[in-house]
Length: 370
Image (cartoon, rainbow, N blue to C red; front, side, top):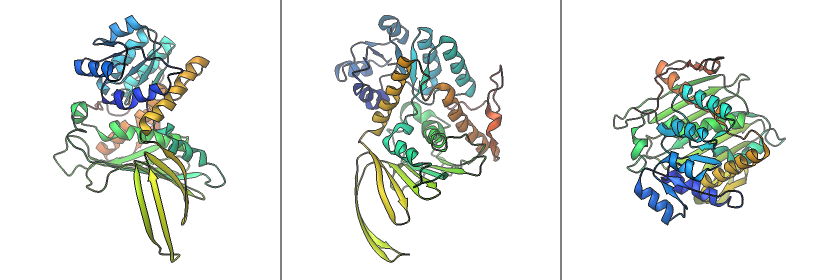
C-alpha cells in the first residue's frame, strides 16, 4: 500500500481484512513517520517504508494499492507497473485525460491491470437497484436524479482536498458519474453544467448543477451542494422506471414517521433503522426496502470490488473498473467543467481519444489542483 492515511485506515485496511483467505498484506509506505507508526502498531501492517520503490523491490508484491493524493497517482501507478505489479488506485486516477491515456497504454504494454476504486456500484443498495432495471416490476430506466448536501469543515478541508480548485466533480462527482454509467449501461451523448459560486469563502466550486442526455431521450440530473445548511445527505438517488421508482440513500438513520397520504386521504406510519444505506422500491404509496448496507459501506464495497479484481487476475480475465473504462467516467468530469466555463453543452463524442494521439478536445487547463 502506497499511502497510509485516512483512506487506507478507514476503507482499504478494513476491506482487505475481510479477504484474508485470498490476500496477504505485506507492506505499506508513507512519507509521514506518524502514519507509518500507526499502520504498524495499531493496524498490524508487517513492514513499513518511507520510499515506495524500496518497498516494492524488497517485498515483491503482486498488487500495489495507490492511496495517496491525486497528484501522485500516475507516477506511483507507473512505478508499480515498472516492477510487474497490478495496481488498485484511488480516484481520481489522473488529473488530465492525457495522463489517463498514458496509464491505459502503460498497463497494456506491461500486460498488467490498473483498476480504479470507484466502489459505489458495488454497494449492496446500488447492486440491488441495478438488478431491478429491466424487470417487469420496474421496467426500463428512464430518468435518474442524484443529490448531495455536505457541510465542509476544518477536517474536510485539510491537506490536499482544501487545495483543489475543481473540487466537487473530482472528489465526489466522479462517483456519481460512475453510477450513472452503471445504471444506464450506456454512454451519455451530451452534458450541460452550471457551477455558480455565490460565496467567496469557497476556494473551489461549491455548487454543481449537471444534466446528462442519452441518445434515446433518457436523462440524468446531478446536484452537488456544499452551500446548503440543511441536514446533510451524503448521496440520495432516485431511479425512475416505466412502472416503479427506486430510491437509494447513503447514510444511517433511525426514523419513526406518521402522516396522511393527501391524495388518497389515507394515514400511514413507518419505522426505519439503517446503519449505512438503504434502497427502497416505490410505486405510489406502496414501498419496500430491497437492500441495506452496513455501517461502513465504503469498506464493504471496496472489498467486493477488490475481490472481483483478485478473481479476474487468477482467472486471466479483464477485471471490472479498469483505467480504460474509468477514463470514460473521468471524461464526464472534464466535460462538466468545460460546459460550465463555456456555458454550452459538451458533446461526448468529442472526448474520445483519437487514433495514435492523446490531445484533448476538452480544455487542457483541467488540472484539478492549483
